Image 1 (cartoon, rainbow, N blue to C red):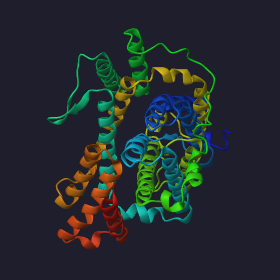
Image 2 (cartoon, rainbow, N blue to C red):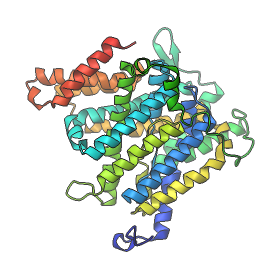
Image 3 (spheres, rainbow, N blue to C red):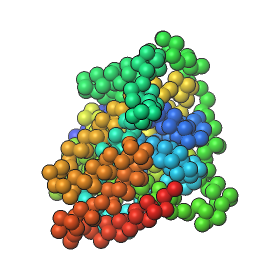
Image 4 (cartoon, one colour):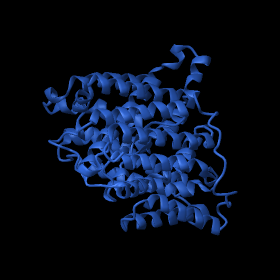
Length: 436
């Protein structure tokens, strides 16, 4: 085992790798409870989604560790789960089973473009500013969902939205959770988001805002309600009814966000660990295949798109340098399957702090955009602002992709726009024309 993972060459050992794997798990364990809550809003069975989340994370992370040999963990992505529920199922009225089909197809496409080797072409075709804008916009979107879910922000007939009732117990609990989580993160505590959820839940139980769970450890919930559900549309609808323009846009959005989120995360984490050589990541294709395979597996099991987690950097900071750390993280996700009773304490007040803080972290991408160049600032701004205001990640991406060629042509920089971007311009114009 140590020879396979090259412990000696990389200056590590089982203790460091195990500690690193545990640290990464604690930093991202919140997804086990946040993901079922938000996919549950789409009509999916929360217990089944909990199992699907844990299994998709375990399988994807172990594949990453064994095949790509990187200490990088995977799990259903934040932002992508919000897009799944609020934009696709609720916003477009697409059944969650069909949405899972979109996740499955996007994963298959990801595998194909990785194997064929067109990854670099696609990455280079889309300007970096739009990638950063998409990441930041998703951050604002999920933070808004958190604020709204906790009733910190509520509906207003006069101003559309306004501050909620700060005498409401659950709202106060969510605010408490945000403050605690922010303090833990500011102190540099690894797993601060996860610990923040635990402290918030305990406070909710103490003040009778959350019911005491029936237990901590229990039987693993049934996966039957979601397993293979992505095939259900084929039994109920014709191909023309399934593959609408909306679904095609959904598939492209799942693919786009996962593709660049994964590429960015892999590079950032690998660079921190010192794996990047001459601006290139060794075994990049294997790492991308692990990620895309995990999305396909996750869709079959019953969860939204699985992607690489930036929280893996916490494990690397703790000493992880090889894929063995990923195996440790994956095994811990399997062990977590027996802790489903804790889902009972995960209310909107408990999940809100996690969404808001993750949103803050993702908004950091705004700093990488050159706001002084108007032709760049306009499509980037529209991408960012449209996501929370229209409650749709796809609409934000569409606006940015439509406006970018226009501003670049107006600036006289049309030749710098890749042909793929012009093609996507027309695709997203059709999206707006036929958008329901």
